[in-house]
Image (cartoon, rainbow, N blue to C red; front, side, top):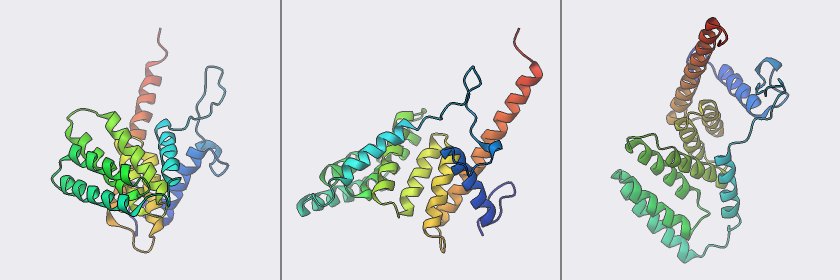
Length: 227
């Protein structure tokens, strides 16, 4: 059984929660009227919620990489694997920048391999955690690589994990939960513990942010309009 916080303690409830998020993000008819995203301008007219520019950029990168499928020579594939091995060694030492450079070289030799982007995404996350400041550009780089890996290898749960982590680090908890859930569904008979834990974490963080936003709105309403 998949355990989620705040009463979401069954697979059916978890599934309903994720479907609700997916419907909200896509703006489909599956979402109840009360949960439809409500973004309005001064004239109280609904606006279309813009797509995430970072993920759109990543999709373009993935498309260019996929176009090179079958064009990479065996020699370049071997070079790429050597770079990956070097990157893995540096990753193990938490030498994030060196690992990033090694994986970047691997991608230059073979841009069609999803694991290179996945590993570089994890390296960007590691670098962001040790920078000591809110490094949005590095987190966005991690997100781009995760999206590329997801497109290059759409049936790979690890790519979903990378995508969920990157989205979560950027504060996009609902989107992160969706990515984690998709990864779990790819291996529903025996989903990885890391994906299940990540899903729980995303839901918990998302609900906390939502509750804080609700509290802020209540406080503002009590204060009344500004004079």
